[in-house]
Image (cartoon, rainbow, N blue to C red; front, side):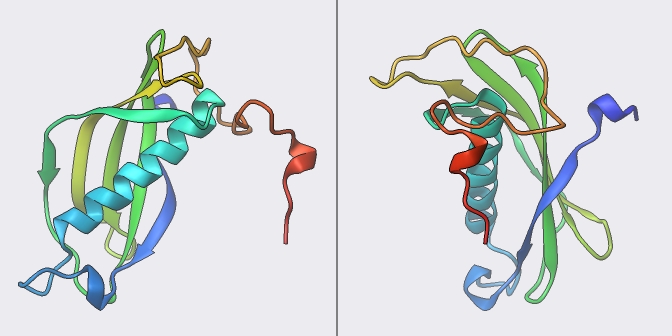
Amino acid sequence: MSSDHEINFRTRKWVRPEDLNANGTLFGGSLLRWIDEEAAIYAILQLGNHRVVTKLISEINFVSSARQGDIIEMGLRATHFGRTSLTMRAEVRNMFTRQSILTIEKIVFVNLDESGTPVPHGYDTITLNRDRLPHGISPADIVTV
């Protein structure tokens, strides 16, 4: 697979007791909430706008599960820039075994203006060197601890 299509696994979650279902494995609803949040952050940083919304999540393929104590990694990759949208692919895997837990081929976010109307974002390439900060925020505004 070429580097243009690789997924970057940047976020890790520790599977804790409150994340489990009745079978003692990771509850799919918790995992989907984590993915949607991670995808929203990714869209914000790719589009440089904190006003983005989930438009579509395609078929979700649960390949395996995770158990309490496992650490999972969530990865996303932009696959297409529309005029007002960003499409991405997601994969979740077990950090230790690298076994795939879930794949989603298509998650679409839409870029919005202040009134909630879709607005062109003006991008057509993935940013890898530095995230695009939301409009109105400069690197000097970022506080590091």
